[in-house]
Image (cartoon, one colour):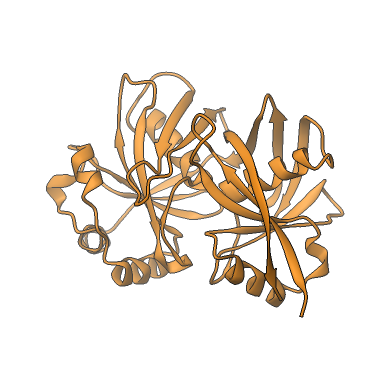
Amino acid sequence: MAEVEIALVNAFVDGGVGGNPAGVVLEGDRFTPAQRQAIAAGAGLSETAFVCSSNSADVRLDIYTPTRPIPHCGHATVGAFAQLLASGRFGEGERVNETVDGPRRIRLAEGRVFLEQVAPTLEDLGPGDEAGLMRALGLGEGDLLPGFHPQRALNGNGTLLVPLGEEVTLARIAPDMEALSALSDALEVVGAYVFVPRPGQARQAAIRMFAPAFGIPEESATGMMAGPLGYWLSRRLGLPGTAFQLEQGRLMEPPSPSLLHVELEPDRVWVGGEARVARTFSVVL
């Protein structure tokens, strides 16, 4: 048996607190995929990133939830590059991360990490899937934002965007995790990104995210889903501007307030925020 050192990095912190904790293992090439999965399960975090070598980019991140690998993860990517910056391996500037969908640029500047995403595609759900989703969330059609319906967003991961009309409704959600997990697998998505738009406010949406199919009952900051939401706020809701601030994690138990920044380009989306390296810990492999 051997001890594996993991850095705990809180990504998308809000005013230096909260955020979403990710595990970061800097020498990921030492481990097989099965070992990485075991390490991620032992870490017990929503995602753990393994920094691996790449022939086509600065690094390749292999990312695992406690139960399975995941193609992309925003907060683990932010956490990993923040740890690379803190350890002195990288300085500020632009880097490239190799992903299963090709190279993605990373910007390191002014205490923030931003990751590049492709512009998402948005698809309507069938009536049966929409009804099943609302039942799994413990909600009804009348809880939706008037004039809007849930959509499936694809940007490398799959996401269910669920727009609600009232923040009190967002606060009372108690999902049927088994039903939501089954629906997520059937629709090939990571989970549900449930939100309330806040037009005219500095933080343009309040969010909760549930991904039980990936071993994540609720997550405090979700970078890969924030990009599609920023795109939705601009292209579907018509909010002005190309930069959005999104608030997540305040309604969790216990709360973990997170702040995600989204910047839109014509064919690209950037998602970023601040990260704080909290501590290191070990798991036995």
